Image 1 (spheres, rainbow, N blue to C red):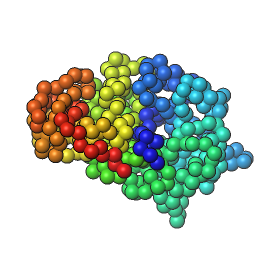
Image 2 (image 1 turned 180 degrees about the vertical axis):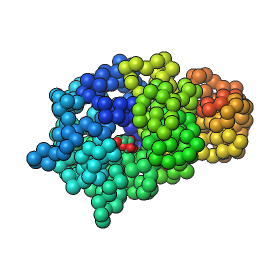
Image 3 (image 1 turned 90 degrees about the vertical axis):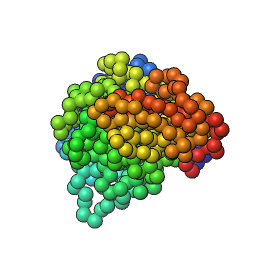
Image 4 (image 1 turned 30 degrees about the horizontal axis):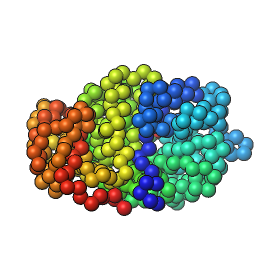
Length: 394
Ligand code: GLA
């Protein structure tokens, strides 16, 4: 695959964190409308994804097909896909590699080919494939995901494949080979900065960062470590995002999440009510200079190069020879940080740009001083005086 054909981290909206099983075709249409009207589509957001609980819970029809719940999707999935496509967007759906989904709806185990064909007939463009714990005897995660990957390859439609196995079986080592474009590395994200502990119920932004940062070697070239949903705009309202005691974040923290997900090349799947975003949420989700770091042609995941005294530095090479640098302050107080470019092996800087403020930052050849608020992440684009050879990660 040549460099410009490489798929970038998918961008879109996913129903789970805010709406869980309270989904309906009107909601899905409204989110598609809002993705266009808010300007998100113009910024590159593309997928509207229906998560768990969309089918008839009791089971399949006589031919073994999944059936959309007629109360939630009375017009059917094909009509919904047509609508979403008419907006210039793509429709995603959810299933599970096991017999039942995490919420207890029918999964795809034993029906991989039937389901892939059904999704293709409906015009589905993206499949999030979950992994409930009732793994049938003799099966492995890799085996189950390989089977669905194959079914998708043979279904007659291009469907982006997203593995959602939460990291327990190290999917970063094998998911790309099943055909997946992304694989979750962590438990479900909660709408909180730091949950203190990391487990199935508790997983704040920085807890996800700590699991994902060491996995940089496994991402790139059209396959990405998925850090789960972007929580901007939830403010503690979304359920299950507010499970495990999570009660929302400040806009500074949501902006930090966006920054860190961008520099680590995570897919960007938002989950708030797109039809009712405030200005702060729109500003966080639609900063084109920030999004460009995530969608850059050099698909290398940014690396955490420094972590001391509550400050962390992430560096990501960009296609045109620039570098993105993110400086995170995890402390409870604001602080000053000297970013020494030579310490990270970076060449002398000709220009440093603050991507959130859209302005040049004062610097000398070898570094700069930054004020970083508590839980803020500054994001810089550094243009070297002499461009190095471009690093593409291939
Ligand atoms: C798991 C996944 C979530 C969501 C739910 C649905 O917990 O990790 O993202 O899809 O299942 O039940």
